Image (cartoon, rainbow, N blue to C red):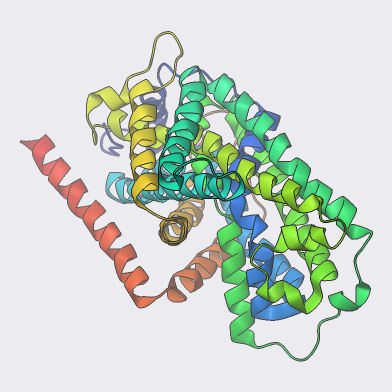
Amino acid sequence: MAFDKRGSSLATLIKEEAAHRDAGLVREIGVWSFAATIINVVVGGGIFAAPAALAGSVGAWAPFALLACGVAMGAIVLCCAEAGSRVPSSGGTYAYVEAAFGPALGFIAGMMLWLSCVLAAGGIAAAFADAIVALYPVGSPAVQRVVLIVAVMALVTGINLRGAREGARFAGIATVVKLVPLLLFVVVGAFWVDPANLKPTGSIDPGSFGAAIILSIFTFSGMETMLSASGEVSRPERTVPRALMLAMGGVLLLYIAIQVVAQGLLGPQLATSKEPLAEALGVVHPGLVLVIALGAAISRGAWLGSDVLGAPRILFAFARDGFLPAPLGRISQRTQVPTVAILVHSVIGTALALIGEFDWLVLLSALATAPIYIGACLAAVKLRRDNVQLLGTAFRVPGLKVAATVGVLSMVALIALGQPNEIIGLFAAIGISAILYLARRSVARR
């Protein structure tokens, strides 16, 4: 069942559809748990390598590029905060776009959202296994890689099958564990920073600065995954915006601190470093290199916990709306989670990890988030205009139209900076999603 605006007010129909879509789910995830899961899914393994790429583009100007990225992502966060408080339903941005613009665009947004999640899951699981194999090789590397991928995916899947509260609790604990080496890097490294390394030299090329901002946006993406679990968030009209702003604000401060310390420790060498955080902390003490290397591996494994908590809810919402087979929309009476949807997402993510590599899987995933964010920004404006509010009083963002404009333009720039074959692939995925929707509608009519 999708949104149909005929015969009743839009707000009434959305409320009825949200109740149908989230039937059987339990709203038990609070502000701090939701914020922790967002941080977990945003702060992935990429931050352990991103400082070098940023320094390679703009040198010591990199913290300013992160700050500019924070403005662009901040605008998107504000739009998602308002849209999420108005339509706090399973599927997240899929639900926002569908409520604002109808089932066709909603379906396309949902397909792109799930595609980005499952591609990222495959890439991160592959990177996790590769990191462990490199640190602790045992027997055949190929066999060890397969065992590690299957084991980590089975672990996070098993935890999330026990219930949303258990999945959120695991993500919260994992967030603390993954933040320890990063905070250690910032606190310890700060005492060894050479101020001379932080002084920008020479002029900056606008094109390079723009590329650095786009690169930074890749490291900030991921919140859309956890928004897909909005149907299990308690008091979502308050929890969703508070958790979003708390999590993303903290991530911005952490990323800037990491970039400054890495630049201060390595200076010009940061731009050519293969493992920038490990090498930077090695300046302080060689024994700390292993701590950062292990932290990077753990961070990737922990990230998968939030992905398996959020992304399967997209499949669940699709099934509840009649776009996918009904079993994907069934809720376990014992654990009150969409068991089949979780298993299907995990199996596909595992398969992608076994046959793919980190770089191209994550690159495709990052590019696929651009139309999702564009849809969320535009949906926030439309939902306010239609005065859609499912639960309680919605959060209102001052200057929402300005925020939406900044968010949309930044995502258009991100797409424009992609390689031609990547852009073609993105629009091909959108086109295939549209064809699938039309085919499904034709079958339903018959």
